[in-house]
Length: 110
Image (cartoon, rainbow, N blue to C red; front, side, top):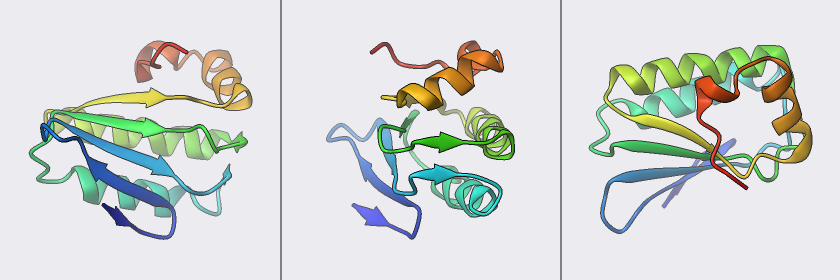
């Protein structure tokens, strides 16, 4: 398992899934670029086929951070990984649904 200031990473036992747990409770313009850089670095050259992004501890997300996650999703797709958002908190789920991004992200069922 590796951890940076904003994300903790671990790979599944079978090596197919990269699990990323967000450590920042608020994803806003102040952390969005750091988040994108961290996730894109983790995806780059990863042998995994799926990126699971755990949002359980995130209590706020702004439009800039949503844009950063769309960018990461596109980078992951280009690298052959499917990105799934797991356990989004109610405010994060609402922001994703209101913006119409639920289908883009593939939110895992509750």
